[in-house]
Length: 372
Image (cartoon, rainbow, N blue to C red; front, top):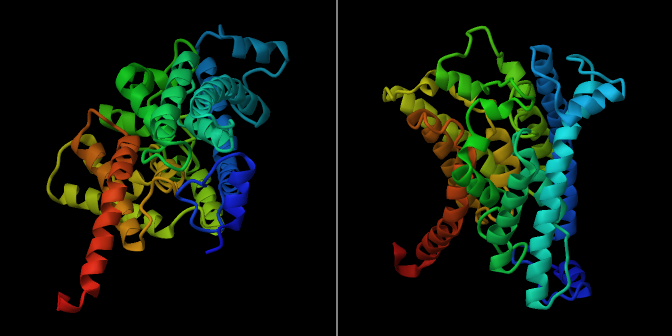
């Protein structure tokens, strides 16, 4: 394949080589542009839903004591639970501070490592890393925790291995993993999904685990669109599906990983249900697991990332199936952890090099003249 474009891009910025994943005409700038277009539906629907949940909390009696609610009142916009403008602006007021601090924190880490290595600061991938990280956060997360998670995610998932394209764990997943284990109360439980004071709302998975999910709702379509308590942008399978089409068209994702993950999730759920596994999530049909929680967002934007995913075609099937199966296993067999997505991404990322190595070795063995 021609390498002129990637080589010229990095040489012009004083870097000696392109990241090792650049093996096709999909250069880093093109990858980031594809991600930006793909993430736009998740951002727009996520902001509207986050603001809608906040407005619903205010309508239910929560005190409008935060500066966001007061700003909307001062502008005469109010806290309508219908329409587009008020929910969208309210959600944007929750999103913007977290995104800015994540961007600044991650950028500061990249600057430090660039100076230590004596190379120019090249923030080509930083905005998308900060965006995807913020979309995975609850609106109620304190800004300083978002900054800490973003900084450690960029440092551990990217910079200590040499920069963008050289890490084996997605920076977003590295940051989320740290926050989950260091501050579990900020990323789990029902209270974190209610961004306004005095009001909380359980996600569909949370309500299911607590035994409070009503038989009449939410509908599968409501969950598919992403209407309900959840993260700032990771709760809409509809938006993630649109993003998947964009990334597949741009060559930034693999349909093998996508189908493998869906098959792995379905197989794990059906097998666990057939085995009589306990837990409230065992009663949830497998197609519901596709639309509740962050499975769709994690599949499209995190586990399919070309930097950390498997690169061999058979390995992509195995890699995707491993991710889906772990999500189903955690949700059903471990009720204490209701979601399981970012832990499954972390495990799949770590296993990807081993999967590719096994596939390559088996392929070499089969081509040997004495292999029979």
